[in-house]
Amino acid sequence: MRDRADLVEQVDLEHLSQDDSSIVSDGEGGLQAWLTITGSFLVYFASFGYMNSFGFFQDYYQQHYLSDYVPSLIALIGTLQLGLMYLVGPVAGVLFDAYGFQFLFQGVVFGLTISFGTQSTLAIAGQHFKKKRSLAMGIVAGGSSAGGVCLPIMFSRLVPQIGFGWSIRVAALIFLCCYSTAMVISKQKLPRKPLKSAREILDFDGYRDLRYCAIAAANFVGNLGLYIPYYYVEPYFSIAYPNASIRSYLLPLINASSFFGRLCGGYAADHIGRLNLLYPMTTLSGIISLAMWLPATNPATVIAFTCLYGFCSGIFISVTPSAVAQISPEEKLGARLGALNISAMTVLVGTPIGGAFIKNGTVEEYNRLIVYGGVTTTVAGLLMFVARILCDRDLRKKW
Image (cartoon, rainbow, N blue to C red; front, side, top):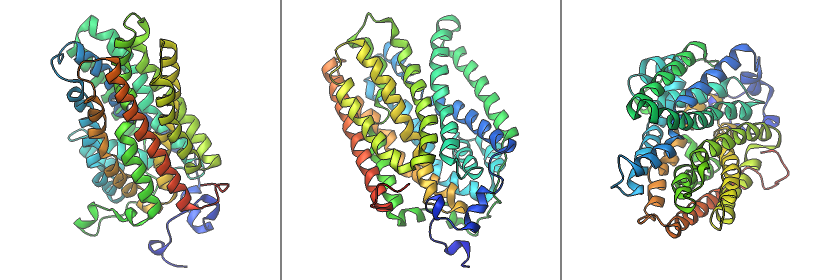
């Protein structure tokens, strides 16, 4: 048998040889695996959960601290967090493959950036599962939605009582507990693979695979408009329906729906195929923006939109990494997931570009923002379909 380094990139589970699948499927699950998933969930709660809560800060800053600034510039604060995290992702993924979870987590996370934590926790979760990998990654990604539900409500309650500064300090203490717990209970499964040279720190070999490129292209375009509702649905609601009291619950609502989308999407992807689920649900995310949010004439329609959009967009966020894992060698999983982050750098500019449509804060200006977000997300769904066709033209097969 050829050496593993020469194997063709892995495909769906039923196509794997006995030797290949045993690397991960042997002893799949168990207490340690689920402890690791729990730790990864906590990291996502304390990292992406905080970033998914930026809609609260967007609305708060527009009304208080930064009321003299245009919304697109305020949105740049939130997207800068995501952009910097994705920028470090390729290096973080390779270092995880080479030196393991503890090196990145304890040695670097607390001193530099959460990117090393989020990248390693997603990869380590994927190591413990093969048959249920999408579900496992969906649970991990659900941590960000759980944070996006709890944190905005927490901030909206604490800020009037103890002030903005102390509210942030309370959140920091919660994050410290989450990261510390994850560091203790998580465990890497596959052996580390030391780097042979400094050139290996950046690994973009995945872009030689057209399937990987198509997924990356979908990620690139999708992140231009994916977070538009997360950032702007509350400011839009305050202008369109100023007397509606439910405005402060829209962000938790969209994140709660996203949580269920990530869990249900992960479960469904394991049964019908990752890309088989990704391309219709990503396309649907864009369509419902154009068909529900854009023509909305009452609060109930916007509320229904937030529920449906959160569910569909949650599937895009959680299942895309497992789709990449499906076509990647196990020993390169961290590097491939990290390199995918380069394609997500559009998140840095996508939401501020949308915010540039808003100058006077009118509903008509927000409608242009909605069209921008809906079109980019729909195109991302079509690119996911291209990735599916590149895997196999027979759409009945599990991919």
